[in-house]
Length: 368
Ligand SMILES: Nc1ncnc2c1ncn2[C@@H]1O[C@H](COP(=O)(O)OP(=O)(O)OP(=O)(O)O)[C@@H](O)[C@H]1O
Ligand SMILES: [Mg+2]
Image (tube, rainbow, N blue to C red):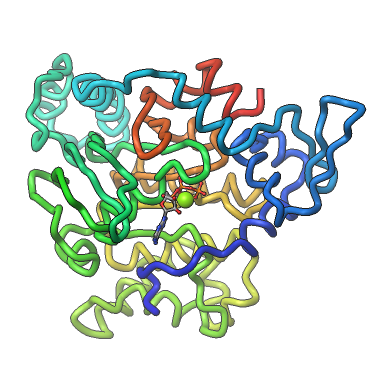
């Protein structure tokens, strides 16, 4: 199976992630959505104390609120009886343009001044969909006969990041699957840089329009060396030499992997595996990274490392990042924009900074 294909979900990895997390991690990640995951029957380590409203989670961690999946979904649905309008979603992404452009102008002195000034103009929320870098317009999609996303809209500019949060089963991964070409799309349209990509199959997404997809599940090949794993990321390159050149470029960026290039991937820590997965995706020089739960399975220092790497890719290399993250605090702190999904629809959207301060989001996803 190629590293870019889907695999059955791996409860083992989810469970081990929770078990491996330390107290600090839990403070950062004690979203109710995670609590719901822990509360499933398979997560038998959960113990409720009837004498107290506080419910102890795995190991030393604890959460003060545990809601069922249905309850979280219902509560999220109540946040907005009607989701944000297309105009609102479009103006959200354009309002951030000056900020991002300004920071890149100061770090890249050679940036063309007239382009910069043009980007300082107030946002025009009446832009046509195709004028945005990445768009979903009225997309309805699902698996087989099952519809998961209904009339889904999303707008993002180049070099921005958007985080999807929401309860389990809300359809967050399905948004990434749909963009990558892994679902059945029955209505709507997706564009990247003005090009209609709705019907492009996954290999063409990677080859033609430079979208790379990092799975929610562990996709490292443990019995292959780090080099071999990286070369798998270059399977669409015309020849092995080009793949090797790209591999050397990526390795020169990440010493942590370079030092262990001939060792089997099985010896890597969880954080290093995530780094390997990101590095493998970079072999094809993607412009857009789709990342499903980058923090899953990682202890806090590796979560920080992964987010630092993503921040570098976004801010210094202008990669556009569409991410799903259960660790809502980390995701919202990182992302320029965030959408809250419930039952395949966006019920709330804002900048990451706005949503992290939203009391309803806090109650449902940030553990307080
Ligand atoms: N490959 C698939 N085939 C069929 N149904 C699927 C597939 N992947 C997901 N689904 C279904 O689509 C719905 C949305 O799932 P999705 O994985 O997008 O949710 P999610 O928000 O990412 O949840 P989680 O937080 O648990 O990862 C669920 O009902 C799920 O069972
Ligand atoms: Mg998912």
